[in-house]
Length: 361
Image 1 (cartoon, rainbow, N blue to C red):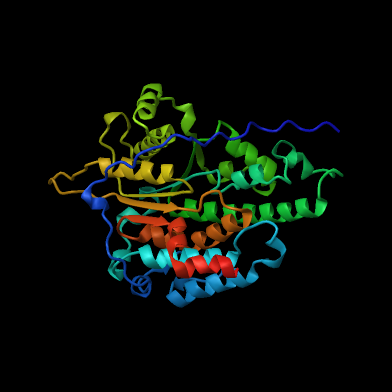
Image 2 (image 1 turned 90 degrees about the horizontal axis):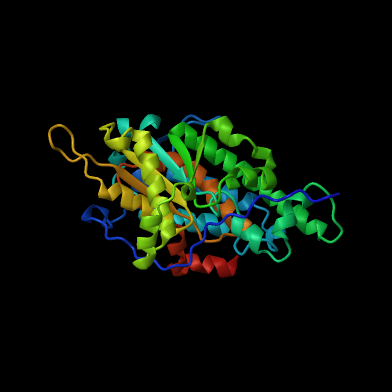
């Protein structure tokens, strides 16, 4: 049987150096208290399983459940870390970098879904692209057809294991996206080639094929909006053109959401969250938000809360699932936090206590 043609590979990597832009004083780091001081007043949105206050004990219990329910023994061939170590690492990141006072979690207009914008990356954030492309036992151009028919040249037991993890990943992505659209407008912004997001869902996570249309999630391909002059200037200045493209795409998405395109006054920007695996998402959103000065009719400063979650670079299948599962539970808390957030899961590796989890896993 002839192999089905694979979609074009994503092209989302740039190998030029970039410089971190200067950010205003509003972006400075602030002391971070214990998570116990912050969670007391927070109420999670209604869920099928339970409702009511979200306590530290509940968060820890959910992480323990995720850790003990993970199939660590069966995934030693797939991932570097176990779900247990990823969840503990991520929980530590939240403990160290979240808010200062429980009153900051009071519900306000800016937390409403029509005031909240959630921007997600695709490759290595929701889709394990790097892992699928880099594993020598997986032939990227032929992998998807192998999921539908048997080929003697492949290790069927290994492919079955990969399929199992991709199915789990698909379920995790569905849960996260369904949660995101309840909390605000969810948009995927990617540097991949056009149609890659839809094609990769169909090929590698077919159980959620059509979910973007179902949930009304827009996909913005940053490369489709070309800015040749700005990119040339970026290269000449030693910056990453990917950062420029992401920044332009994110700026357009934010302006369209708040109705400020084309110089229109629109609404004030209030609550924007970015989730991605690279510095380009992190720096692009911070640059877009912190460059904007907005004041009300009395001249008072109008704050836009800029929240960035940077996930691990080039994660394994196990790492990717281990990050997204708890993130889905924390999303409402992050949306309701009154202030800027800059959470980098990767920096937790510098913590000796957290880094030790890797060697003991």
